[in-house]
Amino acid sequence: MKKWALIVLLLYGAIILIFTLPVCILAFLDEVFKNGINRTEVLEVFTYWPYWTGFALFLVSQAALLDIHVNITERRPTTKRTIVPVVMLSSLMMALLVIGAALAINETIRKEAFSSYRLIYSLLGISWLIWGFIFYRWSKKLNPQSFLDKIRQVLFRGSILELLVAVPTHIVARYRNYCCAGFSTFIGIVFGLAVMLCSFGPGVFFLFVERWKRLHPEKVTP
Image 1 (tube, helix red, strand yellow):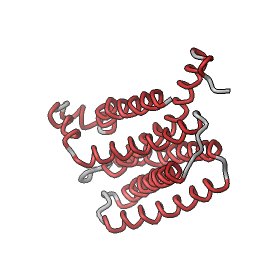
Image 2: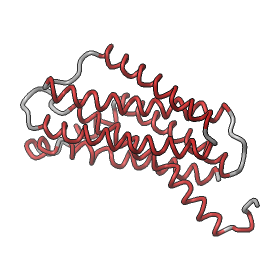
Image 3: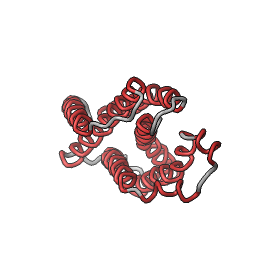
Image 4: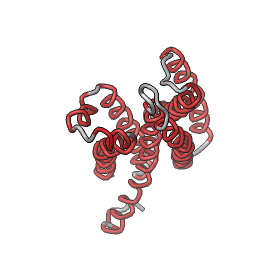
């Protein structure tokens, strides 16, 4: 089962890498039409450390979700070692969705990118703690499968709600004439898409597992 989990993890990472440039171009399509595509400038996104930090964060989050799904599939008991990373990383993703929505709303209202990093980090920390407490309570009350199903639902619904805020505000921001128009709302779109894709990962893993069981029924543990 670990092989299937690794395949899903690699697919998740590949999707993020493949769709990075198309998403960037679509988000700033008016600039592309106005100035043309400068291949060097577009590819510079892969030279920024925040991009790779975010990529690593979401990859680790996906790995944590898949790890506990492997334990469930192989009927191994879930331990604190597998539950705690899921709680911490899933609550962090929810906190990023809160930050993304806040950045988008702020830019729409104030017509400028958010500049108070102290306030951003404070909001991130508070949101992380709140969601971490909620998810930890769920992990105590629910069995592992129900807990993970609920986590997936919250991540998916949260990403949809966040994108419903980020996408329209990004369109509004791009029609306004001010410096760095649409940058904060673009970050919100990025967070929303990354979390949405992450919520799909465990479901895709189970599709692989069901396929494996049909191909190798003799190896299925009764």
